[in-house]
Every structure is written in structure tokens, then in C-alpha cells.
Amino acid sequence: MKNRKLIMKDAYNLQRFVDAQQPLFQQVLTELGAGQKRSHWMWFVFPQIQGLGRSDTARHYAITDLDEARAYLQHPVLGPRLEQCAAIIAPQVERSARQIFSSPDDMKLHSSMTLFSIAAPERPVFQKVLDTFFGGERDAMTVKLLSR
Image (cartoon, rainbow, N blue to C red; front, side, top):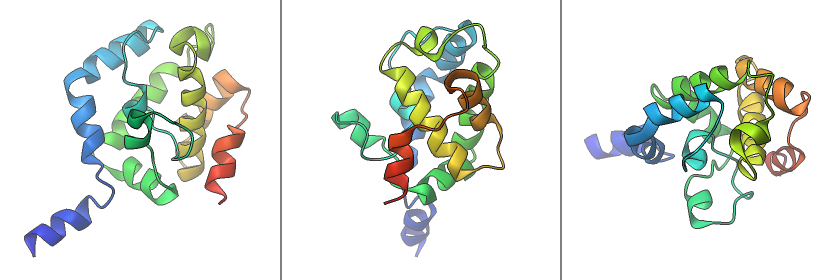
């Protein structure tokens, strides 16, 4: 019974994100605060909907649907971390997403913030990032994949 509870508690294997973030989350915060992403962590800090990324890493960290996105946001570690990261970059109006993240990570940010703004419209920080860097527009491919 205990194992069943553990399986149900993390039905989406969200622990994969916690494990990936743990050794370098402070570095993520430092890079975001400086307005310059320099290392490789985009997939597991700003995850995207399944179907966008082609690499093994992108597929491993893909969010399957809105239910998983909501579970991610409700996770006691992941939800607050995602909001914290979004809140750090949202006011950086003097730089573009491409200047902060480079390509293609600027597009990953767009799709991630689209996913989470749809999953949790009551959390305005994700829409604020879209407003700051993408003219308030959602990523069309993410919207399309969510509507299937």
C-alpha cells in the first residue's frame, strides 16, 4: 500500500525535475538575475509541452498535458521555483528573450510560459513574461498541441 501511495503521489515522475534542478538551481538564479543564461538547464527549469522537442533530453523533460503542468505547479518545490524564475526575468524589459537565453532557448521560454499561463491563468507571472518578451502572444504550436 505504501508503494501505491508513492506511485500515485508522483504519477508524472516530477521527481525527475527536482533531481535535475537540485545541483544547479542557485546557478540558474544567478544567471537569470544577471540576464544571461550560460549553462544547460532550460529543459528542466522551463519545461515545454510534449511534441516540441526532438532530443532525448527534451522528450525526457516534456510535460504531457495540462494536468501534468498543473501538478508541476502544485509541487511544493517545482511550482515555487518556476514562479521565482519567471518573476526574476519578467521585469527585464531592457533585454530581449533572445539576448537573455539565446536561440533556441528563447523559443523554449515562449512555449513554457504559454503552457503554464494556460495551465494556471490565476498565476499572472507567466503571462507577465509573455507580455514582456513576446508582446503578450502565446506560442502557437504549444496552443495547437494543447488542443489535441
